[in-house]
Image 1 (cartoon, rainbow, N blue to C red):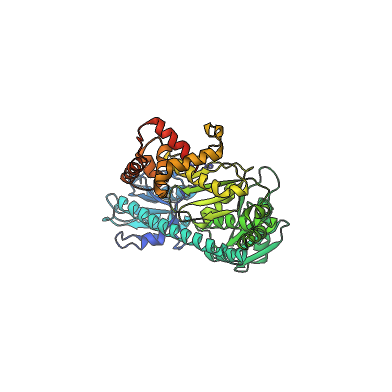
Image 2: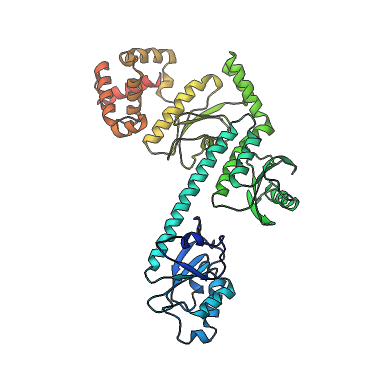
Length: 490
């Protein structure tokens, strides 16, 4: 018997029964039951059990050749009981094979399917049950690909909408268009702040407003999302992560598999936007940028962004190049809206009291705590920490800030010694950076190549060039120690 705690259907797009009937290679024919285009199947299952109920999860196209049917079944209640059990188990349709047991579909089975409103499909002799199952999975794969493409396009359009001069209305309009319904932003007091999309009936609007109250933060255990149905309209509500009581409500005539993902992306973007609206940090950042462009020193501008001090985080996704949505989501997870999206790296300026933690799907490099005057150095530290994290396959690496031997030497003397020692390679930044990375990774060619995104032969050539220009034996541990000390002063 199906476990009521387990979802009755798998997280894959269902297949319309009409799409399966339209396959000419299968030659299937519906001979009983409702011809409803909304009937869908989630899988195909073959069973010759007289009572298949214990083995069904719901949503199946149950296939049978009638091996279980007794000779006198047509004169009793056998078929009526059989179909009733399939319907009770949630079966979506019944497929009856004409061979090798039966030449025709029993009339009593046709009548029972009509009575219980279960679609009955005649399977011709030349069509195998395995061929039907394969066709179902092919149609599912096509639907899944189409849904992934739809979600990807929606993510891109929502990110573009968030960058418009009117970001909140633009995101709501794009979301409403993507789900074919209505999107509403509710304020902390429950009032509609903005909306877009198809007008909703009064009852639907009231039901959506009540659902928004369910997810509005009210204490421990409050859900972050909820769904409901009103007057045939599917409703969903999402608590926005800004912590100010904003809620996103969505009403749509139907619920597609990817709608939740699309709405969740919109909720992340609106969380950032409403957070700025509520706290004023968006205006403060704009003011800080203008002052920087007009020549104000960074140390004077930093007060607009927060009390500080700061950490610089460099992050790189493990799977693909970062996009604006992913970058914004990372910034929200790290607790900072100060995000810069580069070609393959996301940089985040984080207040030092919000200690960055490892993030699933990302590799992070974190600088030492720094005042605004040290931001450029912190940026370099974070970049090097990220390179080391990628080379060592570590999710997060922090720049070391422990006291060491360098603290025993006056900084001016240490810097002068470093300039003299490294002068032969100082004019070629690639050589100095390769030498630094190679030493930090204990002379590993492969890990240095990964950290610098170059071929291992390139690393070998650069290290050999460094050895020649410096006239040093880089296999000598004393030489390596002295070079590492000097490179740390740069």
